[in-house]
Structures are given as C-alpha cells and as structure tokens.
Length: 109
Image (cartoon, rainbow, N blue to C red; front, side):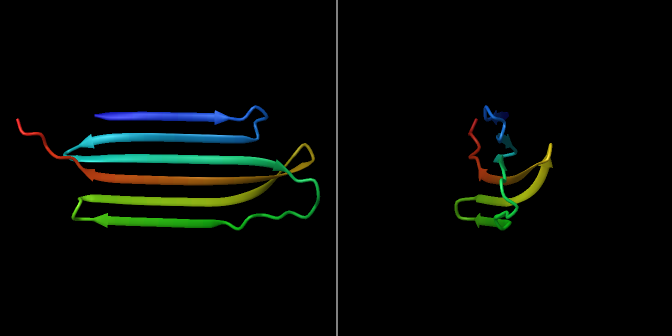
C-alpha cells in the first residue's frame, strides 16, 4: 500500500513558495513515512548592504530497538542573492526531510 500527498502553494505576489510531499508505504512489515518540505521566499533588497542569514544544517538520527522505530530528520537553511531587471533580491530557502520507519504488527490469519 502506498499513499502520496503533494502540495504546491505559491503566494499571490509570487514571492513565497511552499512545496510539500508526504509518502506512506507499508512493505514487508515496515511502515515508512517520508515527508519533504521546501520553502522559498524572495525579498527585494533596497540598499547595498545585505544581512544574509547564516546557512545551517541540522541532522538527527534516532534508533529505538525496544519500540522498533527509527527516525531520521534533516533540515538545511540557506540564502542566495539574485538580480532581476536591475533589482537585487535576497532568496531565503529551507529544505527538510523526515523519515520514520515503524514496525507494523502482522495480522494473524
């Protein structure tokens, strides 16, 4: 069994975009849940001095053998500068990935 959910949201002024997907799969007694998110925002910079946020990376991995669970989470944040029609923009983005693996009890037939 596989369930997929996909969202693509864009603001009215097209300066903010959110893309999210979720996938749930049951295979061989293991349920895997995978969630992906991407957020991107564009801001026009009026002056020459740009305060860019520092890039960051966060990774978490957990293993619980007693409850038969595994979890992985990764988040990346960053920014870039771009010029469009002579205007300077700061583009800030964030990616995240979350994977959960769970043991599904087998039904007795």
